[in-house]
Image (cartoon, rainbow, N blue to C red; front, side, top):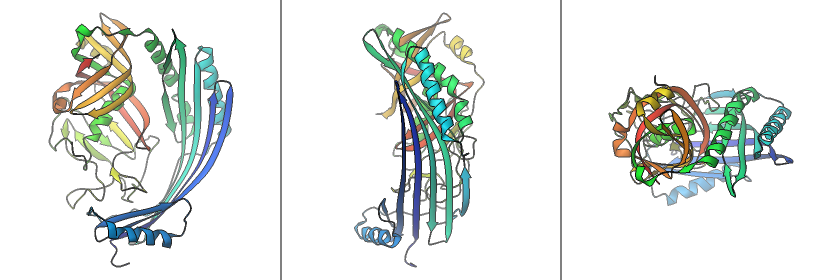
Length: 414
């Protein structure tokens, strides 16, 4: 035991109730899962063993210890400050309320002559990490509700569809955003059905207004460039053209609050970009040294990576109308099919887009939007007052973002 730098035991339990409405059918599924795990750090080798069937920590410890002899990559471990305590997040509700919401949303889509798949999920998750080398015990019990909305229809022989996820720690929090989400989804489907082909003669540099999920996706990709372990990352001191402020805030009143990360480091707010300048990176215990601070570890049964649960971007003072007026001619994107860092670009594949000119908005099909990473310090023109909320997944980790609409300069291609 004394030769070990770190040893913990993990018990992760989840009880999930899923209520689904697909067309005229209603389904109720329920399951419980428990995962046991051990993490060992010896001779700067981190080894992890986990199982859903082996609950004997001594056996898992032997497996993990054996694997340290085959270690290739050595790690440094920030062995300080371990959270100890118990936290409960979320409110227990009767799942019959969730069933009523799912059926109600399905009926509303039917009234709009749309087929749909509506899924309501109630998650009860408990996580207990016992750090044997420091005697710290961190416990978290979380209740989380999710709604998955997927309306679709056939229009002139082709399928048009859209989707959204709403999440909250109570039924009321989820219900609060149902009406706005449904309104946006219907608009997305109408936009897809009416979209015209983008004129190839107009490809090139455009002003682009990113709102809704597209805004969140843009700042999400910037956050990828602010991870301490990222090969391609923005240097400290890098300045954006606007006074952007990006904060990782586990205490913000969102669905994914937390008081300790997956390496049992106490949570704290971390400002990554302040008034337009990069001032910090997201860190784990293995990416940090004495001159920085961990606290952004995601991953219990794999080597943790630095990433956030809740990303908050400070709003600006532009309205959407002001963005459109300033641009005179622009592309508006509020939902995306895919976004990725591709070569040296942030690459958007829009689900819905509109061309705005002469006080008109017309749906148009845009193949891709490219934002050069080397020019991120130039592309942001203005930040909006409107805040967009997105709940999604990154490598199976839940993430939540609140971001303003943003006016940027980008390249449009067909």
